Length: 188
Image 1 (cartoon, helix red, strand yellow):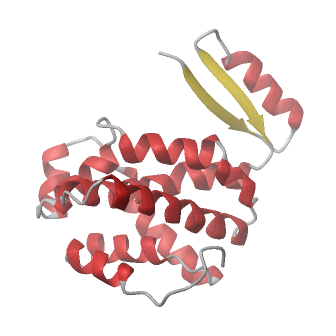
Image 2 (cartoon, one colour):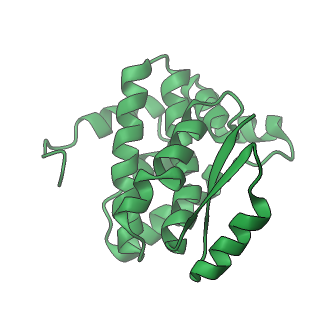
């Protein structure tokens, strides 16, 4: 099946080398020099996929998931810029591209964890049933919240997912708290 990815390296020559080694007729490889942005996009999308799964598990529909994903990209970009990445990186494959597939795929382990949380199951029970399969977003949520606090980045979705995962917050309450945040401009 056709696949498209981005490979990032500080050196354009290194990125082009990786591209030349990996590219094939069914595997298209783009290059980037924003290593921080690409790494963060690849990690943070897993946290937002848990949130998307919760939406699916609660049966809240496509509009709610689209809103979550859109606000997730804004949150990822704020976070990425604060840590030295570039906002535009999150409009590409390591941001929007990775987020769409991870939030929408039936194969996403992180989305699966969220879906089960949205259905009312407890995290420990979900993870035990998964066995050795890893849902990276669970641990990433803890690291992301810690870094966001350290760098003073506003991450309301990450904060709520962290509360659901580590403070036993009910997902419905987390959703209500997100929806009750003070009104603001979309581009703020």
